[in-house]
Length: 577
Ligand SMILES: Cc1cc2nc3c(=O)[nH]c(=O)nc-3n(C[C@H](O)[C@H](O)[C@H](O)COP(=O)(O)OP(=O)(O)OC[C@H]3O[C@@H](n4cnc5c(N)ncnc54)[C@H](O)[C@@H]3O)c2cc1C
Image (cartoon, rainbow, N blue to C red):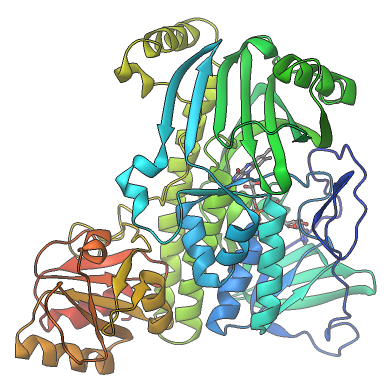
């Protein structure tokens, strides 16, 4: 039995404008107004016995709330404990801004995508400059890999808006208890469950949990409490981030400077977010003093150098940042699962922090749901560590490479970067080596295929046609599958294969759909059409084939023949002994 306590944690960054907290989170002149959620006295306070919950999530940041919302959508009870009473992190209100297609597809499934799309800003053009020259540009709309999804390649929106929408949606769905002003200060591991101590304005209490999910961010006390081992690296690179509203708007494009003449030849990022607020990230000199570089006078001088002495703008928020990279050696210890920034920390180049935290939550949500509903064996939960650790390690590696390109060591690294920039000005091949951030992707799981070559790959939320010719998308099918695996069978099947499919859903937790080509019509309810082959392409299979899709829109397995072995494939994918 391990028992540990902690009482001091402080978030990074500092606010420039004093935020007036109200019950809305619209932008208001003078800063962001974040919502204030009320503290409600929990039933455990004053109760004679300790209550055991199936799932307790510690932390209501973007990853904890994504998990909470996903569980609520599946009808799985959980409690969420957050020491704060608002979204965002106090003193660091403006962090994530850029959300990738995979995250947007997940948010679509959870029912908040429309709110994000209405508030956020879509962009597809990115330009990279060195000095006064543009060395590289891209338009994501021209890249076919992004075009087919119902969601765009990216939406830029302040992280706290997404968190606010997740709170709203979780409350709409019900079944998950969001407890604000509730700080977890102690943890004890027992055989098969854990006890947490929670401090609140009305006193402290204890809860037991079968599964504890640590989503308490980069300052988590659970690493120490669980004796977690990790790999960490901290460099001397320093950044100052300014959120700014301009009278005259710059173009809605992502601009990055590897060497900005207006910033002493250091890097600068320029991105639009919701409410016409621009995020400008300035790279500072190594080990720069955070207080000095983020003073208002310094920030204004920098803005004038970049946009001209007559720039008219309002500074909404400023914060200095030093980035580190960190990755746990295991994402599950005892009853505790680590997700989001507690699993790994990456520098923000490529928007991989929050986006991959959302993917952690989506991965764990369906597995917890399937196990707690008795549709999968407990062994399924072990695959969370295997899959998301692989993803975490990839993301740390990719962002570390970018960090080294942006802050090269003197000597060979700097010479390599100078050569790349110089070649990229003239030769297209060298532009691929310019690394101002490789944007987050749906990480593949190389060990996860039950059978076939494509297991472990993500399935895009592409469109198909229902029998009545109205459009549907992959997320509609996943919703219909209701937390079960989804078997998509492509091409005309023999009578015997059709009979097998009809029996399959009675034998295993799976829903089957036959996917037909452009000209075939049947009256079967469980048949859809894929006239342009987008659904088949998204499942990475060709011709007569089947694809077994998981509730998180990843492939569990693919194959060609619909035969009796499919039952074993499904049971294997769900760790059913
Ligand atoms: C400048 C910057 C820019 C970024 N840009 C992007 C981007 O564009 N896209 C992107 O995807 N990511 C981005 N990131 C990364 C992203 O912000 C983080 O990865 C993300 O916030 C992690 O979310 P989380 O839910 O894991 O943790 P957090 O957001 O840190 O949430 C942790 C929660 O736990 C609560 N908590 C902490 N301790 C306790 C306790 N003991 N008891 C109860 N509650 C507790 C806190 O109150 C908080 O609500 C950026 C980060 C920075 C700093």
